[in-house]
Length: 302
Image (tube, rainbow, N blue to C red; front, side):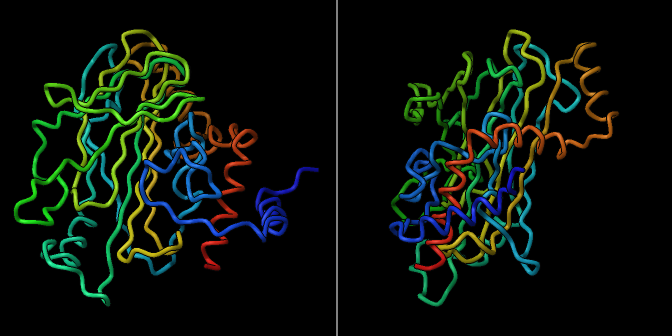
């Protein structure tokens, strides 16, 4: 009989109690690092079919935790067309307001007894075929004030808060640099190729990018995103507001309509479908998640 995952986690924790203390990570740049060193072990925790697990694999909230949702606009919820471009905006106005309350003047040093707000966001689009999911472009030259980090010095030009990574199995993630026109561009055309949109704490109020659907028929494409926010930065992943989104989008064809009918008419919810997709990847991801669980417990002790 298979043991529950929580029981297996506990057993591994007991066997590895003498492991070295891990550092907490709060930046997507560290997601490719070893879990025992505070990294993500190559997982991005977007909750997509390509990743399986979301932010809630490590972060958790309490009953008294104030919710901080993330809102998404621009998704083709009624079906996408091949090679069609759409602007997608992700925003978190409630947390942005709370950030301004806690940091009314970002140019002033934070008092030692004042809590420091923190947040992180991961998003991607993944084709169920595992192949082409299209192109993502971030146009830095036309970024609005809400997409920029807060200005911490009067003479310092604020930078855009969002980053774009190209990820392929067996290779280090590539941080995309802007071209001569100020555009970050990532193409997903091959099996296992992914484009990750990421943002960490800097005071930005939203993220915006242009998604162009693949020019070939790839079936349903999932939009998956995770948002974690905290009013007080801490060294442990508890008492965080966690918001996860996983939505399949079908091509505007008869086959796409049939897929949506089966998905909804078979007694399945979108969240339920996402859970089953995540469950299918438990077997090969178990080692990384177990290591993260170990690191989480060690951070509590440190």
